[in-house]
Image (tube, rainbow, N blue to C red):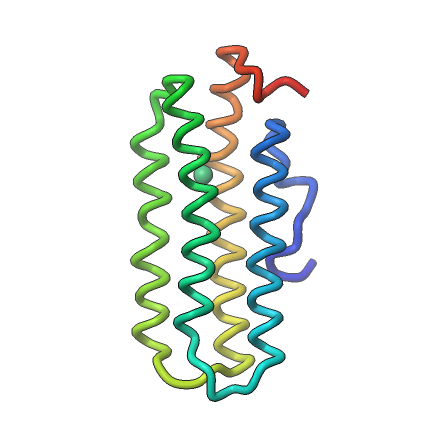
Length: 140
Ligand SMILES: [Fe+2]
């Protein structure tokens, strides 16, 4: 399975969240592919900024959902979301000049591991809470 490919094993059982995860992986993958087809004098920063923007929109959605249903793990989840940004910034700082397939592969591998781990822990816990309280979003 390639990096950032959707796998049904990522499903947490909340349709709106699963759909956003599918779209998020797809958007990130497309942005990386687009850059890999461009010339390699480009910089990596705009790509990382776009990824930060895509993930930021989705993270906000999840946090709002947790807040609306008083999920007691909101703060820990929010902290984990927030921890992605400085990691993307470190990527930027280390890779100032030029894009290479090796760099893009590293970004892709890093995000793939980060997102799949996050989905399988924090997001599963969010889904369990929504089901527990009978949230309408958790109904199939
Ligand atoms: Fe999350």
